[in-house]
Length: 272
Length: 108
Ligand SMILES: [Zn+2]
Image (cartoon, rainbow over all chains, first blue to last red; front, side, top):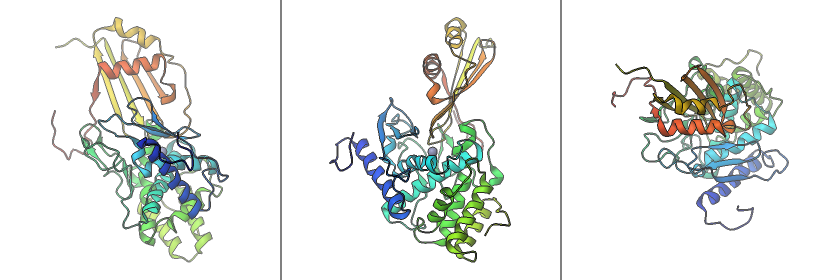
């Protein structure tokens, strides 16, 4: 247990979690003027060393929980700042829109966590869109694994290809949407589609992704988003957010439209 | 020809923050050893998951009969479920991932 303002504990996982909570708080506070995950200063909490050789990190509804990994496939999950940002963003989503964790709304819930997880990392490193790796969970795999990260937002389906784990199954286009009963309806698979849409928008606008692309996504996810929204509905929400903030004739709205078009999601003609 | 297995149980884990699917399968002729483990599980319960990035477990018993399937959030895998899952992982074999794209050489 390391509380705000206390010196490093000497426990690597606890110190990484502490730094990661701080970096995540900073992005939401400094860029989006959001005071913690609930918007009302809720203290951020994490549990580390969860379970025994536990190969996962999750959001339990109140806190981030991280395992140490089994040492064969995964090392400790606190090593990745994008994963810490991902978990805490599940908290933001829980308070902001409550996106239902199944099917398309579940894949959007996952994607929003990847988007802001990546932005936490980019903001902390001061990276522009073209400098960023757009990888989620880089460095979590042990050297035995043929792969660089859990997911690639820029190239969904290309993060790993390994004898034990198989090949990264993420689709990058809506034509390849995966229907499955596993993984709460493929929430960690189909998130590749909106993830890539976000990167296309960020690349088109250039510069720091949190400034405009991130702002548009943040506005969309915090402005009356239905909990069961599908990809097309979320795309429309981002178009509305872009035109509300930047105007109906703007590079930002053009980029949003092109980004979703690039992954096969059509925005309704009434948008913007 | 080998006799058909009296026991065939597969457990498959999906989800988690990594979204990586892992499976383990046990085949055995020792139905007496496995039947009580299977029978002890509450097959009719449908527990709900809370939070995000939890594992999802699929438990499939092809034998001994009857054929049974359960889909469980990680939080429900305790007691007899945990016992069954742990035994299959210990005594079974990992299920190799499917080669869906066929761009690597076959081996093993
Ligand atoms: Zn997640």
